[in-house]
Amino acid sequence: MIRTNTGRHEIALTWSDDRFQATLAATQIEEGLDLVHIKITTQQPAPPPRLTLSWSHPIVDIHGLWNTSGDRNKGLPSDWANRFTTKATSQAPVCCLFSLSGQNRLTFAFSDALRPAIMSAGVHEEAATFSCKIEVFVEPTPPMTSYEATLRLDTRDIAYYESLEQVQRWWASLPSYQPASVPDVARAPFYSTWYSFHQQVSASTMEEQCRLAKGLGCEAIIVDDGWQTTDNARGYAYAGDWEVATSKIPDMKAHVARVHELGLKYLLWYSVPFVGVHSKAYARFQDKLLHTIERLGTGVLDPRYPEVRDYIITTYERAMRDWDLDGFKLDFVDSFAFAPSERGSFAAQVHTLLPSQDYLSVPEAVDRLLTDIIARLRQLKPDVMIEFRQSYIGPLMRKYGNLFRAGDCPNDALTNRVRTLDIRLLCGDTAAHSDMLMWHGDEPVESAALQIVNVLFSVPQISVLLDTLPAEHLAMVRFWLAFWREHRDALLDGKLRPQHPETLYPLVFAATPEKQIAVMYQDTVINPGFELADTFIVVNGTLEERVILEFAEDVATRQFTIYNCQGQIMHTETREISKGLHRFLVPAAGLLRLQRNS
Image (spheres, rainbow, N blue to C red):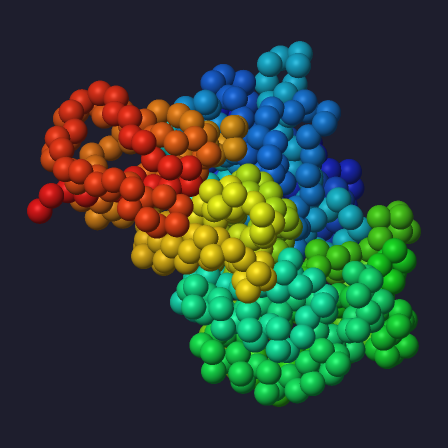
């Protein structure tokens, strides 16, 4: 064991192999911001031992814990209960402890986002402290002679979202972590076929949805699972050949061309690592698998073989070239791993190259695969779009793809809100997309509108059969997508301030110098806490019919306009707004606009 002191924390590093020597050194960047550098070396290549970084932090004014695996749980766990694994294709190596006022109390992040690591921060009951740990080399790893990484510790009294924003910028500045560029169309509403069609797709019905979606403001379609198979069992036994099911899409090139003529870009779904047991490719690659998932009827390809990587990449190149695709939804990349039941016995597989392998490390081979995918596709279309789904939304995933979508949460507007905001806090300018939006046609229009209102701070993906929606639902979708497009500069690019993550972001602000937008997701008093810009908009993201604002000072004369969820003006008035509380009658899922008089 060795130790170093940052002034606020004593950091310990432990390891179990005497062949390795280690150093630990702390550097203060500014008051409250420290970097701890770790280095291990050995004379001869050897499998690295498990490394454990540990320290404690007093529980003073800490009421919540944020990490990428928390989802709807932002509570304080016990030190014996809270652990999550992060690697290139799953989660991100960062934790943030925050106060009820939303201030950072400790944010720690790790520079190595490639290899599997276990992160933990939990309450140590005996001392009322947080026990914090990062464990590296938690799976057998190929031999090496040296390893370096950095722990970033931030205890500055700044907003928790500012601390996380700075973490994503730190990662983006690291060698080989530069994020992919984002074409503007990736930041416009999409139509997705998954919830509306599932695997029952056909060229004509999808094209009709594209026509309607374009009229509502969508700019791209993602055609999900089903285009490549006539099997509708929701498994992956027929994945891997990636040949069009011609009974559904007789001529894929002509179909894509017709969608382009309607004005939409075209993205196609692939389950990257899967080669189904009934596919022709299975016989070719059955001796080049990491494992088999019997319940899904599929093998998981081993990317340590260049033949496997080339097969995957050339499949996408051929599809883009032959069908004129604009991008891909690349799914299940977190499945590139040995089966949990085999992890105690695969050490030999990462210590000696097998015939035809060129990598020992699975994470390094996945990094090579995904890096090469986007590089080679860019040679065909520089503005290619690549979508990844939560939980593969970490800092390395930003260099492979340019769209991060919330994990599946069908019809669950609240979870979609939490997941999109969680993504936004770390994704920088990578496009954050909602999970596909769906609702029942008999749903009251105000309730249906909450599906969109809850994801306003991300790019909406619509996934309902538009030709079956009632007229009032179509009017609602048209209004809210138009609102989103008009105010994208604030909603997507403005200064984002999500309040109270511990209660699932009940109030969120976004602002540019010219406009401010507040969205309330529970009945509460909104105190902006800032001088109002020329335009101030409050969205009522509840089924209540009121908005209450509190101003610390008198506000200049404003014109206020109230809209319902279909964009109809319900009231307009010009008046002085004085210091104190003001109650406005705003319809459920409607909005209030305060505009400075010229």
